Length: 286
Image (cartoon, rainbow, N blue to C red; front, side):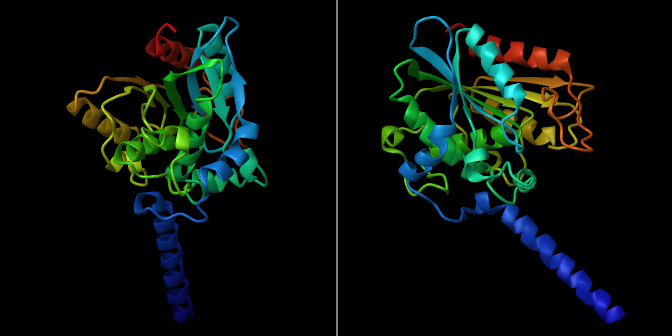
């Protein structure tokens, strides 16, 4: 019996170690099956969901990236509010085209075991390239808006773009942005983002441009907001324009009405409206 318990303990330690190492593969530069930007674009672009203001373009545009469970109605609401304020937006669905919305595979995304932030940054790259050819979009005025896992992907994209490091799911930068992967990105907004040890953006230099807005939850039980405060502090030390709002008495994903079974997270309409208003004020007049 003791020998069996020993082997069970060893196996548990090995599994935990493999789990942790796999979660850090973005930091380690490991990834499976990198593809050309053209192949990634052929996967992602058909699922892009555009929302344009009623007035004549071209419009500044926000790239909207969901949390680890995929795009929900909170992104649709945000897209509508942005359009009313004069901003176009595009929801980047990283999940559906990869089948990650099936049989709850998104839970592995949440655990950092598949499609981590560095890998998902590939979708940002191909979408930025797509903006260049959209007749109603001003690709010189771009905002990245990431929720939770989408904030992780956005931070990682900014860090890799500054360093000239191609996102690990791509074999090379898309031609349209290869000369400067940061060109046109003026703003970055992060709703309760992951800024922890597995994040490339948490451990590497970030550009002093764009301007940054962190919308954090006090005592967040899903991500540790203190890691994001450390990132914000590093940005302030290089004279970046950084704003931080910390919401109290709410949970992670306070803006999401759709919750998984047994979730302890709660929708809070007042805080959701406040975060949207702060985002629109931060983005400024088109």
